[in-house]
Image 1 (cartoon, rainbow, N blue to C red):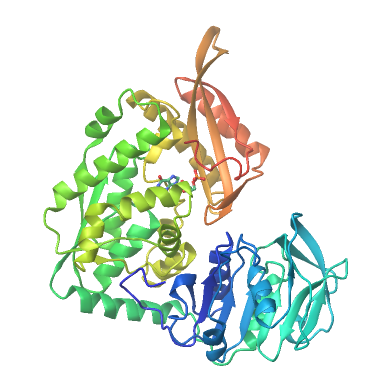
Image 2 (cartoon, protein in one colour):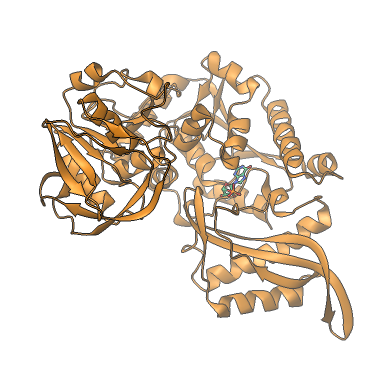
Length: 515
Ligand code: XMP
């Protein structure tokens, strides 16, 4: 998937993951990297232009192999690579067809846990326990199995769920990449062990190549980049500085930041020795947002104004560096519908940027990394753990934590509640254990008693989640003591709030932010 014009990952002997459209494809790439190997995702249309892979994984997908326009790939080319191939779900069914077998279509979907019964405890199933839980998500199944194939494992109904055709083609019906497949990582690892000399993924090598790449691309040119205090743009700015680039880092303070955040961002950059320019424009944003209660319109107002302010400041940029990450690249390319990716696409792929990109003026050195890898890179660049450990914060800031209209007094209330909650999480040692936490506003007035007076005030919602790259999230079972202290302090100190609620919604169906 050659969407970025910056390639630091060695494409030779990598694991090529071919995307047939499963919602879990990205996870396969992550898992392979977690196992220590270089993995790259390729759109099916790019096949067979996938460099010189050392192993190939065909992902799952939502379609049926029997559909008239079912996704397909050039089997001769696949075989021609001469490397081990693993078909997952749809990938397995496609391989079975290619080897002369058949697939049985079904309207009934098998979704959820199943038990695995390996025929032998070697090859793909070395060290895997009998009845190991695996995760299924499919409707079609293999029917006729060709002579060249052998069954490696069945499920509790004795249905074959894993096949091997010849010496180097493997298939599994379940998803080894999701955590619900308890020994999925081991199975994936066993597959990778059948390949020879796979390229190792080491952040230090990667950093060296990135720095060289940046030096080559930048020379003496001035590079501008936007910083927000978030992990991605911070690592980007420090990386550019480390590469000796002539960087201009710009911090647009849209006034939708958390309590004292602007000051904190400036201090952090000062600590790292990277000068930043602040553009203070809270008034402009508040005025533009005045009276607007529709969540999508609010996002568009913020996104467009942000771009205007940034470009007014930058003028004619010779080079623009962006902290785009691999999931953003993949999701923009596959038009995935996630809200976050849509907004990031909005920021990082607007017309103005696409024009610059066509002129070779956009630099996206992090575009091959996942979030946790960016943190690791940041660590190896010497960035302090408290900066790298900051919770993610949405581009449109507190506006998405303030359902309905945004106003100065509402923002001030959110800031006060949030600062108390985050302070308590830190005090109780929970800040680093949760993936993201915040306090927002529920602008609904309810009756209460404060002092001896009747109160009629808003509510605040506390949210703390653990998540894997924000695709799914679970609420955190915080200690009652922490919640009690937070609630007490908010009710005592924050004017305008007489009720504190803890959000116990998982994603899906709820999103992490309220808007
Ligand atoms: P949701 O609310 O979609 O959030 O479950 C998932 C993650 O993305 C962050 N988020 C955003 N980040 N621009 C961003 O840069 C946005 O518009 C945006 N909306 C949500 C959110 O904080 C969470 O980490």
